[in-house]
Amino acid sequence: MGNNQERLKDLKALVEKWEEPATKTKKAFLRLKEYLEKLPDTILSFKSRPGVSHSLRGTHKNQKEKSLFVMVDIIDDDPSNRWLSVCFYGDMITDPKELGDFVPGGLLGEDACCFDIDKWEEELLSYVEERISEAHLSAADSG
Image (cartoon, rainbow, N blue to C red; front, top):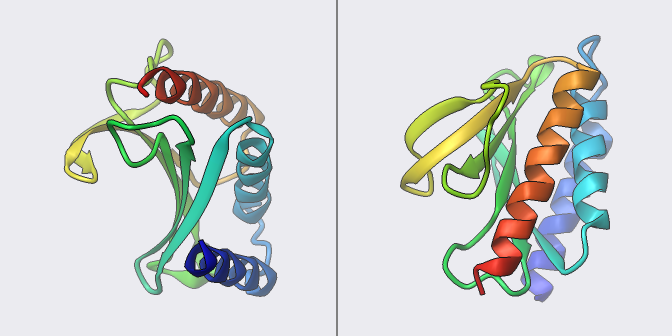
């Protein structure tokens, strides 16, 4: 896991350099990251593709069928105006308020439900946290 620890250091460096925009997307990202860190049996990993995205991935330790249950992407096409895309496998969550976008093949080649966060919105962040908990529970049962 040393390699993943290095990647998480890369995440820390990215966050430290990221100036908080008026939209407060950095604050929103940190809130979701902290939420994931508090979920039991969750393993976090990080993959950076500068100029494209920086992906924080959550996996449940019992998960066998899929490689993650959530991917929180920092979209980096414009570093001065980064936004978030939080994606789940479509079969791991519900979206009762239909706030997400269905993306065929959008998460590692499988159908996904993604939520775009381009500014701090308390209601949307709470809703996405509920989806994270739902996916986490689904992942725990998939092992």
